[in-house]
Length: 556
Image (cartoon, rainbow, N blue to C red):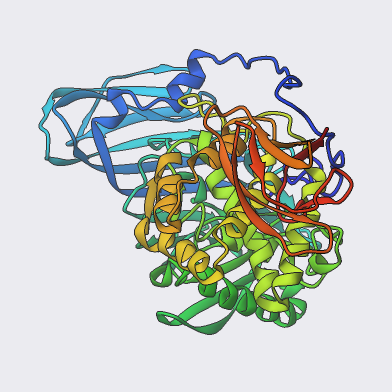
């Protein structure tokens, strides 16, 4: 997801480059206070790990006039241990009507947004079973989607209803019952949405059936064949028209399907193909095949900026290049393509194909997808342009708190996960110093963790292993700490000495240094003073590659 340029992107209306800091100038932040509700939402207790979700059938009716929803969700699961009690999640403002198990209503209790179901006997480990949850109510209405969560009730220019959902971070249980934790993705899913006659629902996957109901509603059945994270499941309702295209990709023909408001059809037919196909070419080059060929690629008009809903990417950027008419990098390169199409589609690889197990590691989604913007520029306009773009976005890095959040409480880290994360990955590319190896690492991540959930160690260990060097302290400094490392120099008796000032005790990172006018050299440094062999260097002519390295420099 991309948030406002001043809140989550942060790098167009950002605060500018921060001053150099040393280890003695640590930023002091108030520690957040978490509640029992946060723990129930964010922690994988035995009541959640006891069952592995295999299949959902979400069946929901949307009463637009009354902003009311009702329906059910079928949970099909495999028991990972013997159990007779489990937890699922649904926001407390929505009523659980009943829970049906083998034709019988089951007793349940509620605690904040968690629901606990008691079964009549042990469900044995390895058995496959199911239950169905019926629910109803007025869902939370998003005030400013997608930066908060819930339903968006709007109208198009012809006065017809235009409704959508967006719930990343807040959680899918804001509008439908599920095991609302990213660690357990459902393997496949049927999404049935009933809407007033004359409107169309567009959800994830492929449309397999349309049924005119006797109550004046039309039901749309969408089948998702691939694993999907809960927050990607979406409802998009409007007076949509559909047109299609095909992309000849690495795995063969990929179906492209565009769902746009009737009023936008003419401009969408001109605008979408010339943006989508170059995006797919660039990302398949860098990341490997589009991860959801079976479910197609869709782009859907919505009344908010956009979201990475799997196989149904939502779009609200006004059919114009940039992000709402602005360049996220202030370099000019960001005005040559539509930001939302590129960024939100980049999440098909990082966020949807590779999903973090805990919201604390949302940086995996957003850092790589932020970096995908620069790689898109690189692929289409050359490496120099891509490097300029990624350098430009650092102007909004705030260094206000770590980009990794706390585990187990459904809390993301700092919005710096976007620009700072993208800059970090470009530094890793610089350190590896082999662009083809770097490309194969990015492709390898998507192949190795195809349709899987991952954590911090999975990603860092994979990159280190295939880079051929331990990069763990670099990731730890930039992901788990607020400060950036500072490269400190001293000059004594004609010799040059240098060391890193960093939070990580065993921090080490090679850096490119030169005497002005000569070629850069990679110098391996850690937190201890080391002599740097640069004949003739002094404090007036030493240069550090601060274009590709986001670091502080201190010369004594």
